[in-house]
Image (cartoon, rainbow, N blue to C red; front, side, top):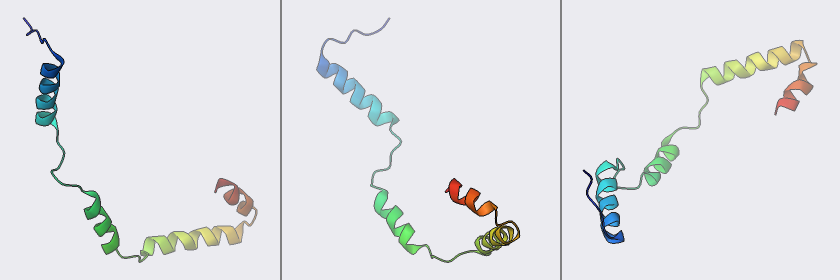
Length: 74
């Protein structure tokens, strides 16, 4: 049998207790920590970025007809 809830206040209190128990949120705001992490990351390129750029330029040098196609995709 379910328990009958009489008032809106009782429903609000029940929801508060339930949400508070099941909430898996941190106690502090994570956005400032995320901004600090972005600032700490270096802006260097990896060898993979340079390799992909070289392959793309090589393919465009071999088949210049692909340039309009690539520009259309952007």
